Length: 164
Image 1 (tube, helix red, strand yellow):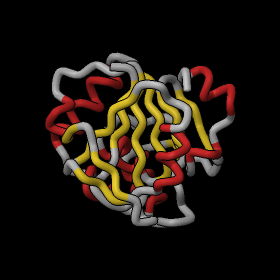
Image 2 (image 1 turned 135 degrees about the vertical axis):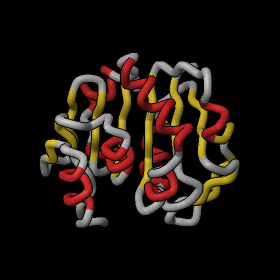
Image 3 (image 1 turned 180 degrees about the horizontal axis):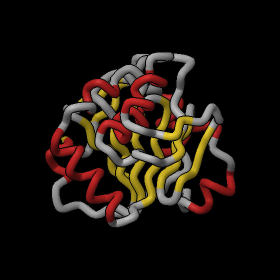
């Protein structure tokens, strides 16, 4: 499988999703439910649920979440999947508040990252709690992980590196 996109079932930006799906030839979308809704009201029928991620090995992972990050926050299946992906150096992009999920799972510990503080200022405390080296930039690359405040902040050379 080439690219997996992970969304909460609610509370994510359709603009961020559209940014990626307009550039990716092959992708599958997974969520906590088979139907997911953006903050703009867009409805997406997902290819599978997070429980279907077991035994999948994508080339790339994209996590998109605004306020819906709280739904992904305690998902043990997603936690195990993302930790294994990180250990295997799968390239990941986390958009807006999705870096909070990576932080809680320990994936961003002692690594540089950014998060969308404009929509959730409390994210700064959360990132510090999980020992993330938070920087106030539009996007940050640290080894195999890119974090960005919004998808459209990613420069084209970074997207090319991720084959997007």
